[in-house]
Image 1 (cartoon, helix red, strand yellow):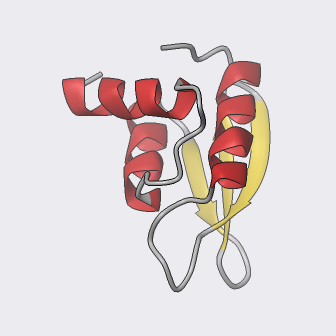
Image 2 (tube, rainbow, N blue to C red; image 1 turned 180 degrees about the horizontal axis):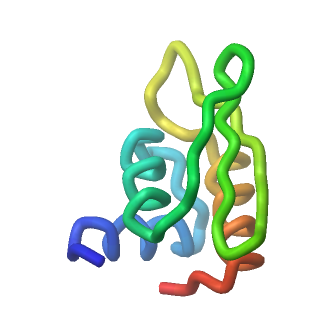
Length: 84
């Protein structure tokens, strides 16, 4: 994993939860971790990593993920066995 992806992973697990993470960076991290991404209807994105599946909604019109979305991504990564 590149240092950039490591920093994003650390930001996802940071407390207090940050709301300034770009969604594209989170998608890039998922790809770097080996996740399978597939498009759903509208802004939905299906993600599968290490046997764990989740569906996220891309933020719009803003490009930053909300605090709730960052917490959801953190829970998903934790269930998939990914820690910083």
